[in-house]
Image (tube, rainbow, N blue to C red; front, side, top):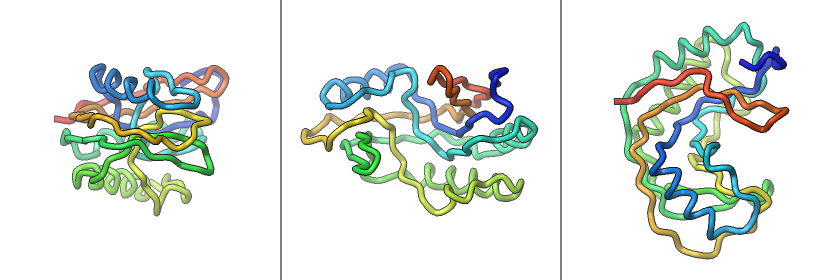
Length: 171
């Protein structure tokens, strides 16, 4: 973790491979707004918020215990969160494996007393593509992603960068 963060902002995410990033970046080129840097594209599984560094061992253990099944995801349209002005890549049909992984993650967090209240009942799987964006009005070619990397990430407020603290392959 960064030395200036006694309570770093953390999240679990599925981390795309280079080909998926490139395909999503092609969508970004057709959107208005401020594009998210390609190296920051991801699908958040659970946003944990600011957590004391003392919780890191439990969070790493949860990551290690989550189901290790790779899953196909197909992003087939862009959507929009109006209140946040975010354009995002959406799945018409989230895979059962993705929903099971999310449920297992939230269960693991709850068992450790670490589940953030604001994350419990809502999950809209997506990849944020642009901020300060109006709704997308065009069609996009589907992006198929074989999601096979699960990560615990620190969001570094000062620089806006992400640092992967731990990663595991899904098979």
